[in-house]
Length: 298
Image (cartoon, rainbow, N blue to C red):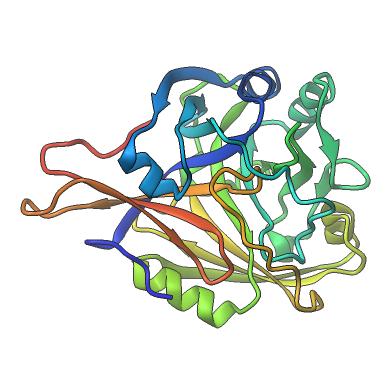
């Protein structure tokens, strides 16, 4: 599966979610994570339909979450609800990790908001040093999208998250994690796009079991980063996953989480958007920034 891009990917610029109730999902993100709505627009027309492979348009709401942006799309013709009982063993599983300064405060704030459900089975987990010593908690938003709260131990945060200028509890999005059935094929795909394999860890043990809600998980996590390394992509390769489900997901289905990857173009190139799929079917929109157009900044 060959990706389409005029030049190598430079950054993971934005995250996309699909919903059947845009006002409910926006309200949840605002209440739970102190997001700001920064843009609401109508997306439609033949170019949008070709991009998404879906008839009709959509309402788009862009939220600011720390230094990250999330675009929520509510399509005129909604697709399927979130796949029932989808777990990290299944090919379509994908979440993104919301970085917070204080896990206790973040979890308490989330607990005060209605509509979400837990994936983790015993609250936030402190992972061992072999898994980064982070605190993490996984859950689903009102539409069923998996999400993760993430906090780093004092003094050990990656450079991007040190000395934040914002007073907000939530700093942004560290990565999107996607289920992977064949690590070699997925790594080759993302490296062809311009990302680099920068880390590999093996995650297992009781803390991982309580975090994932999966019995005795044993997984390889491969970190793939663009030249602007945060946010990045993590491949979740569960060794005991079996085949996993491979149901095709359309752009208007709730499970269609999109990663918007941005390229810089040459002076002779035109700005464009292209929808591509990684080897496990995860949705990626590759955007080329035209001459004279500034790259995305939160």
